[in-house]
Image (cartoon, rainbow, N blue to C red; front, side, top):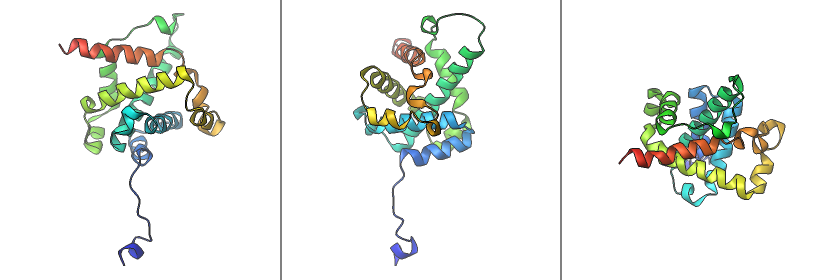
Length: 178
């Protein structure tokens, strides 16, 4: 009788389930949501991230998508003709952006403070960089090169050094904690 009452709809939540909720609460635009979805699918294929809870992978993915989006907008609006690869950001800069992105209401909703998201975010950034360099997971990338996926698989945002800047600043975290 229990299964009949549930209409045989017995599933477990995936990262995408949590991502939809986080995106809605954060008012993420469709590009940020799609980018975060790409990150969650990539995370499911990476051994460092596959062991994390789906809700935590989704939290790291949406934060990373927002970080990249804000860096992309800042570069786009900047009148300076500076190579993005030469810019540096400190761990404190990235952490402050993360705190602005992951509001107290998101902490309450998810149960994850920024400090819990940081290590997963760091592993996610490394996984995306390695995937871009090695051209692995071609089927996943091919899925995200279409208009309805906002051309995320080939988007410049993943190639302009933003990920490397985030990874570099996160690696400084270990040095500042000492």
